[in-house]
Length: 164
Image 1 (cartoon, rainbow, N blue to C red):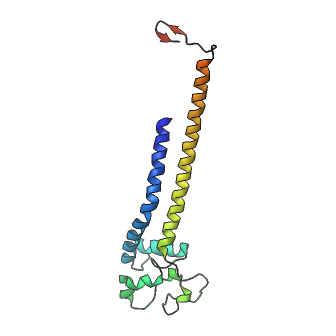
Image 2: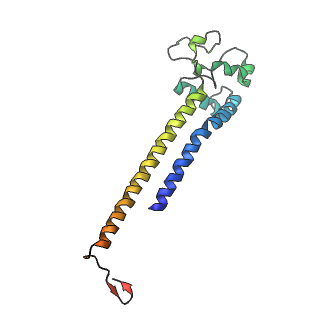
Image 3: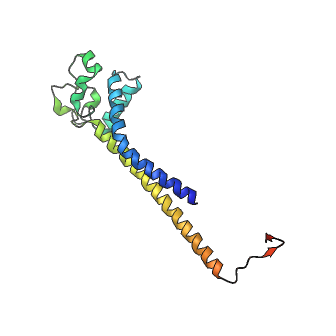
């Protein structure tokens, strides 16, 4: 029981460390994925970016202008961002940078980091709850052992050098 409490405490420390590490890692990873974006549906990176932008209502890494630095933007030469950057309320949106009001203004990096931190906080709270339950169990076991040692009704029966 004590080993589990130590393990869950270490888990909490690892997750607290991850909260601070995750922002740097997300920044590096998201830039790498944006560079490989090619706009085709079968490409996993392209599908992932489109999915994140639609679900989190965001565009680009920091904002929609980040798309201007990608290979996809330079190759297409149509001065537009992916359609996944279009606001749901903009029915005639074609991703054009000429109409920035049709595009999500907030970048995806901050929203992804926020979402991951929320998930990690839930894991940390669960680990802390588990550790608290184990601590309560150890406390109850100690109370029972202390009462048992003081109560004369509890006697060890030793027969032939072994406990009965």
